Image 1 (cartoon, helix red, strand yellow):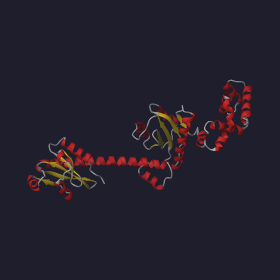
Image 2 (image 1 turned 60 degrees about the vertical axis):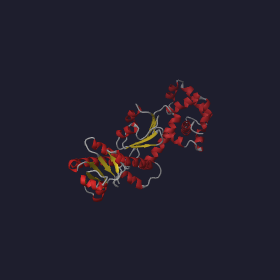
Image 3 (image 1 turned 180 degrees about the horizontal axis):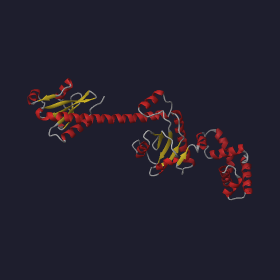
Image 4 (image 1 turned 90 degrees about the vertical axis):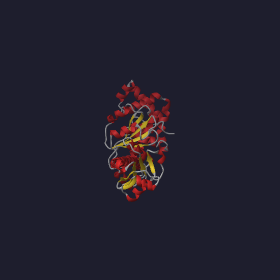
Length: 359
């Protein structure tokens, strides 16, 4: 139920008295004055308001009635209604014959202000509840009841969405201009803070990486991770978890890269997630002898980059094909993996990806 508080009551009084040459009082549902042009009357009981609360009717008090009641001033007292509920009383001090004409106008203004305040409170509650729901929807088990509540709040959890994870160089809040820009860019998108510098942006339509150019200019962002579109909530949760791994991986392995595609880096990110597993350490083992041979590491990187095309690889390295063959043979000798054999080449590729990740 809406509660008429002192701040709103005083706001009503101040607005009314800016145009009326009479004192105005606002009383709560108990008849206590909570807003007034006469500060000495605040927190006192208003007899006229109590009559209004009892009868739900306008109560006028003339000079004669005021003298009989004692401690009461002449004036007009009107019920303040919101959704057909009596929530307070508005009083205008003065001869009823003079102030009656102002009563309905000031009452209408007061009720409009109350409705505006109620709508603001509702919007604030809906936004807060929406943020809480989104956090639950994207992490952990989510009961069907929460998804249904999200639909009722207009969050459209049934839509396919593309998740992006933005890492900022400064603390973020839901009031940060970046969050407002994300929401304005795509009104049906979700923005969920995860820590002081991370925000998930889940937009309901897939767009190319070129569409993110505006994010790379003028915003305090270190990294932007982009996942493939997810068809449902379960898949979206997996995308968000993978984006966290992507950002962690990029911070350690490619800190200068700002725009990161999970699709392009899914294999190294997969190994990053399992970098402490003993199987991952075993995969990286053949690479250890090459740590002291930067030239061979560069040769292997070029070989992998050019898919084993000898002539193209040799030209990229600026060496003769025979020199390339010698280096590849040296790599096979040190690692036990022949770069000309598919299975061994895969081992070298995975080992190169995992290299430096494992403890």
